[in-house]
Length: 348
Image (cartoon, rainbow, N blue to C red):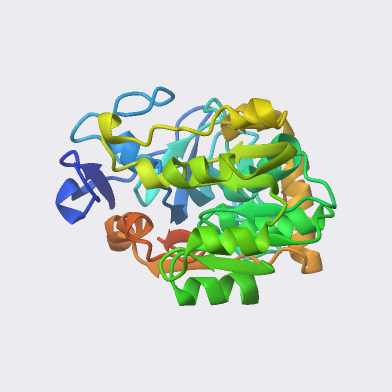
């Protein structure tokens, strides 16, 4: 029996397209001692994948040409010789861009069980690493407070689409989002609990920031980086916090052309903090975060926005959408459907 896999064919200099990938056939793996065979149901894409393709990250092994494209997703265990991965269970794991995969519990972060009473696609976004990233960023890094004046960049993206609702579930009163284009901005207010929006494509951002934050910003959740971050550094209130989650505005920019900051000293003047984080370092709080996120979804406090295309063949286009600004919410691909009854084994 054979399956489809996407492999890296060429290193992109700009936005990746289909020419940078090769769709190949490979045998479906057989179960081995201590391992389990999983069928891929959903695969997510993230902006950082471009950096993997260009070998620009220090936290991943070099990605050689011809290598299976990496990626995390949702899968069902269909055969198992691993006690912690029982047949029928739904897991979130490092799967790669393929239809079937052999996994075990040694990978870090380890595969984790997902709730089966919620849409399985949530295992890519809200009840998974995107949701955990937003929660850790807002709660643990940003130390959100009820009275905070909050701004989020990249607010319609995979992480940003969760930030406003999570901040409000933690007690925040008002959140402002930045996104590009009227459709995204309408969705931010209608579907993602943002109180005000700034359309950076059709609006003067400085004028909007002056209007919405006349006294400055307490908490900035940054997914964009670059010149916008520098602008916000000049607008901080006393003891403000900046959460560095991503910098998609500069992923396609060569090192020598990246923005040179002029307002960093304002951190000291305002006794403010700017902190980045790597969500894989927070594996010890995953169970608690997943339980909290799942509860909020069940209660209607967190309403995931997902952008799903059908078929493994659409993965290259899904990844390109992130850099073209075409996605709203968590971008993912539905690869398959469960073959077996869902095992209700998740602790969440």
